Every structure is written in C-alpha cells, then in structure tokens.
Image 1 (spheres, rainbow, N blue to C red):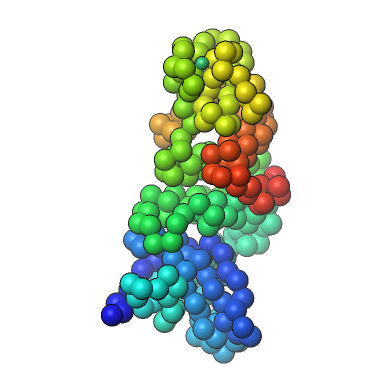
Image 2: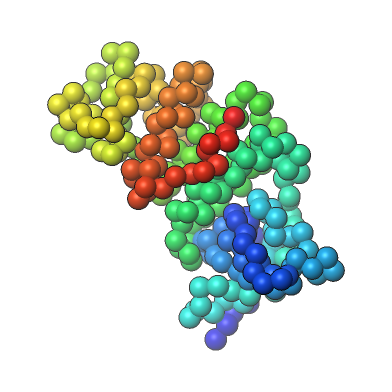
Length: 245
Ligand SMILES: [Zn+2]
C-alpha cells in the first residue's frame, strides 16, 4: 500500500543518480527526514528542474510505502530558495553547517518537527544577520540542534560526580567526552578550559534567552562545539565548519 503525502521540506543534501536523476535527503515538517528519488529532475525540461537545490524550502508530493526507506518524488514546488544565502558564500556555507548536522544525525523517518522549525527559522534569519555575527549565530543554533537531539551539555555541576562547580572563577573545565563541566578531580584528555562566561552564555542559549557574545566566546565555541559533537555523536565531524567565517 502506498499513501500520497504532501508536505513541506528543506533539501539537506543531494547525490546524483544515473544520468538525470538524484537522491535528495529532505527534512520535512511532519514526516521527519526522508530520502526521495527525483527521477529525471536534472533534465532541463523536467518540471522538477531546479527544485532540488540544497537548502531549498519546497512543497513536495511523494508516495510513501511502509516497506521502503526511499520514496519516489511526484512533484515539488519551491516555496523559498533563500536567495540571499545563495548570493553570498559566507552565508551559504553557514546554512550548510546545520543541514550537514541534521543530515548526519537524524535517522530516516523519525518524526522531528523541532529540528525542521529550527533550521527553517535559522535559514530565514541567516539571510539578513550582520556578517560579523554569523559565526556565533551558527554555534547558537548548532547547540540548540544538539539539545533537540537530547544531548545537551550538562552545565549545572560536575557531570561526573555532581560536585558544585564555582562559576565565579574566571575559567571552567569542560569535558567533551564527559558531556559537560567537570571538577578538577574528574579531569580527562578531552577537557577544554573555557571562560565561565561562555558556560553562562550556553545556559542562556538553552533557555532561549537573548545572548550577548563576544569574540572570545565565539573562539571558544569554535573549539568546544566540534569537539563536543565528535565525542557525543560517534566521532562525527562536520566538514562545513572548516569554512565557517
Ligand atoms: Zn567531579
């Protein structure tokens, strides 16, 4: 039995298939991440031509079959191609960081409205945010995506033994492997010493509060977030982070 589904979705990634087709990984608003086969869409005259560009927000129609994990795309209409990202490599690459994260961490078919909403709002605002704030904006949203995945860093006290951590000191030890702040008895090889103010900013990010980050916070997140992702998501590396400016 197949069921016709109409939904909104953001194209996370694509890979060419045969001469004129491609597979697309799509994060949809109400069917989680799915993989679709867009037959013939690379032909110039195809009605699907241009719809499967990465980061496009489309309305798509596909036939869902319970026994399959790839669905045939029937139709697609672009709702928003986030044109201001496409004309600006710095913004485009920033957008691809979150899409790479979701592409590599979301299981197929797992219902996930929060991730969809996060990337949609992220891409929309990324078009107009000041260039100097783009990097921090990416890390803020990446940390929120990590929290949605259920792997939020533990910041209340030592993640290993529960001892109180004194945030009045200027520096705090954060263990990427342990998954949060640690006391000096629970030091390990993945500990990064960060400003206590960076921990406070992370707390504000998870509470959805407005944050006031500076360059030092941004530099620390540039080290801490990739390390954290590497240790908490099975040695995952986000290649797009290398080009984040
Ligand atoms: Zn401890």
